[in-house]
Length: 480
Image 1 (cartoon, rainbow, N blue to C red):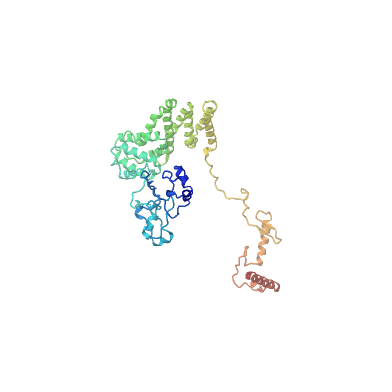
Image 2 (image 1 turned 90 degrees about the horizontal axis):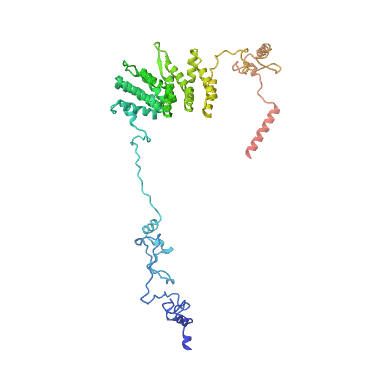
């Protein structure tokens, strides 16, 4: 009985159960010497197990935000609190200074401990821009174009390479034509000295103008300039003559080309549009200095239109519409000067194609729009009529800007009034009473007019009283 009373409550149960919760043996993780949780002093740390078979658990890793071991702060010594049950060992717990001791921490260590895990210093990038850097050119542009053309053709082994390079340059930058064409012509005059070289130059320009649709206009301008500025004139013909001969070679197969396959027709259409540009841009100077167009091209375009309408396929009709939009007004004016009715025949043929041909609906719509365009004089605005002096007979608004006068009774009258002369004379007689004043009241008498000097400048008593009241009221409102 005494033994039972000497034991702490629950000690016997813990010893008998062994593996139970709060047991007395080491296996159960209980309390030695029969001490239960209620009797263990809080200031004593939990005892370490004595059994050699139980190893101490590994320490937890430090948090990522903790400073490195070499930068840990030193905490001044002071009274230590007993560790709590289940707390980490002293070696594995990160040290943290109390708030009262932060003033004693060295500033350098504090900054390194706080800045390293949080602040990322971006590297300083040095700019490579320089005022002496070479000029920027976009992709696909070669800065050697201008230099090569200005320096001549020394960098090109053959004439074809030089000419082809310049033609490609004009295709990409048509705006450079005005600034570089003169140097190009001078270079060609020093290089093109034989018939074969001139023939090669003509062929290169023709192929570029007919293979690239956007170059047909620029090619025609180039041909016109070279026809006037190339000095070589061999027995086989000058530049313009050789160019027209080359166009005639393609013109002679127009009927076969209009009936050919799609590739052949496409090449033929490019030739037709280039010939239209040549007709508009190629200038021929007469013996008396008069500039005219090539009549042979006018005849050729008429026959080309016949070939296109004779084979009313969609692409042929579209090419004919483009050609007439381009040259229709000029062709009609030229035919009218010669008394021809070729344009009327072409319009009649278009109407027949719209009615009979098996072309698509869109192409028929294009043809009808072309007929409408021609009926409106090809979209040209009619010139204004010659100037004629306005009179009351030919201009209904002749009296619109005339001044208005008033009679002595206040009745207004203008120059359009039947009694204008009589009323105006009366007005002039009234002005005799004020000879020194014009109609608008301008004083022509100068200073010291006796009529105006007699006017009394003093105010009427009633007006003066009202004015004083007004001044006083204004002053009172201003002070409020």
